Every structure is written in C-alpha cells, then in structure tokens.
Length: 451
Image 1 (cartoon, rainbow, N blue to C red):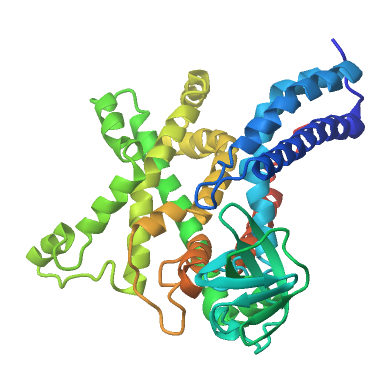
Image 2 (tube, rainbow, N blue to C red):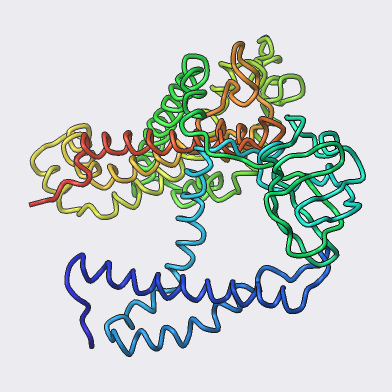
C-alpha cells in the first residue's frame, strides 16, 4: 500500500498528474482526429463524427496512466476516482466555466454566436492569392456594417475543407483577405463573431434592478422561505399525529399522504394547473356553487403566486412528514416514560422533549430544502404562461424566480439565445445563493464543530 504525500501537496500532486494525463491524451486524440480529416477528407455535409476524438484520446490514455503509476505508485488509488472526476469535469466544472465566460461576452444565438451564417452563402467566382472575387457585391452578400467589410470574419469552404479568414477590405465584389486560404474555396459565409464586453451585461442588469432584479429576488426569497416554513410545519404536525401508536389505520394514512411525493412533479403541476383554471377548473366551479366569484388563480399576478405556494405545499409536505417520522423513531421511549413519571403534560413533553430533539436533524434539512426551493425551476416553469407585470420584460413575469428569469433570458430573449446576458444573471444568482447560504450557516451553526 503506497501513501501519497501528506496534506495539500499530495492532493494537488495527484490531481495534477491525473489532469495532466487526461489533457495530454485529449490533445493527442484531437491531433489524430485532425490528421485523419487532413489525410482522408470527407464532404462538408458528411464529416467525421466528433466522438472519434474521445476514442482516439482513450487509446493513449491507458498506457499513459500505466507509466504514471510506475513512476508514482501512490496514484493508483486515485484511478478508482478517474471516471467520477471525468464526469465531474465534463458535466459540472466545464458548464460553470463556460457560463461565467459567456457572462462577460455578447454571445447570443442570432447575431453573435461564433458560427457561420448560412443565410449569407455567397459563391466565390475566382481566387487570386489573398483576393476573392464573389458572385455578388461583398457589402450586400456578407451584410457588412461598414462599406469595406474590414475585420469581418469569413468561413470559406470547398467540397471537403473549410477555414476561417479575416477580411482586410472589400471593394465591389472583390474581397482582400489578411491571409490566403490553404485550399481553393468555392463558397463564403459571414461568421457571426462574438466578443468580450467586460461588465456590460452586469451593468445592463443592475440598471434595471429596481424593476426586474430586486422584485424577482424578493419574490424568490418569499417563495423559498414560505414554501419551506409552511411545508415543514404541516409535515411536522401530520408526522406527530401519525406517530401516535393508538391511531387506527395509521399505515393507510401514511401511504395515502405520501402519494403526492411519489407522483412525478410534471403530472402534479399539470393536474393542479387544470384544477385552478379560471373558467373550467373544478376548484372555481365548486366555489361557484358556494356563491363565490371565480378566482383568477393563474391570470392575476398575486393569485398566481398563491397558486405556486399552494402547489409547492402539496409537493413538499410529504417529505417533511417522512422526515419527522424518521427523526421521531430515533427518540427513545424511555425519555417519554421518564417525563410521564415526572408528571409532564402532553404539551410539556412536546415542547420540552420532542421539538428540541427534532431541532438538530431538522436544521440541515431546512437549509437543503431552502436551497432547493430557491432554485425550484421545475415548478414555476411547468405552471406555464404567467400574467405579466407592468414595467417588466416578458422574461420576468409575475411568478418568475431568479432561475426562471435566467432561463427565459437565455432562451427567449434576443431571438431565443441571449447566452451572454443569461450567463451574467446566472453568475449573480450564484453569488446571491452563496451569500444566503453563508448567512444561514452562520445563524444556525450548521457547520459549527461540536466539542
């Protein structure tokens, strides 16, 4: 059994060796893939599949890991974590880094996405070194903002090759490039380039903070805290009732009340949305029989929020009921017997024994539930179309919380893909979530060491 160097040095050394081996093998796989494309070119519309890069990377990775293990024997213990580390890097850290990066760019799906705009396809009539002669005037065909198209990036292609080039200047249908392509292209496309814009996205968000950011943030806090408080309170009460051994049909009640937790959220939310329909929903029809006017559950901003809280209560209380029953099962019956002998009443037993003993296991559950509901995207999104609020954009409607605002901004604003602005909102959400979590941990002492 080999021991790794102690402390941070051993950790960083192990991670560095694993990461270096993976990066090196990936570079090798990428070079082999590029070499395959160069040696045996395929048509542009039928390229080699991208997963070949991974296959070419795994082939050198295995002998590389063997060589590293012979030089550093302690690293073999880390090989068991290699699949987990790989998936963590690919599906957690990479999206986070990409989101933060996009937050400082003007990346969007229409004008600035770094991809060739196929609607600007233009045939190349003649190639003269660094000079291309197009079939149409360059300014019109490539939709240049400037008459000479200076600085515009182009993607030029042949049947089997493609390359990125930059326009130095254009006059009429002639385009002068900064460098000549390595092959004879036949088609040219304008590239929708995106750029680093610093804090412009953040400035844009905070310039509208009074009408968008702060109202959405306040409702997000109210939604998360109210959901946790009401669901936990109801689940606690039901759990205490079902813990009574003298209660008949106790098993049936437990099964019946946990159904809402067992059902998929998609089904529950859709059923509730149908039940709360203003005109045809059974809830309003029943209220109508009692002489009440129809309640605009899903069409009025404030009632929409009440509907969201009602649905979240239905989805959340079984969890707290189960948590309460589980925590109560760990309390020894001897404690209650001693209290009964001392003459304690039921209320005194509840407030002096049960609730204090439930406090410790409930604190991490409360914090975790708050964090989940603070980013409860599924519930708000599945409730469908929301009533608008005057002065707010369509991406931040009555019931939107921060995460749905970020989603709608990224996928519904600026033609459908304002990734840059959505990334900036996501960074702000991350900072707010970290700040709230630190305050919660500080106030509750959840991370405090027990002496």
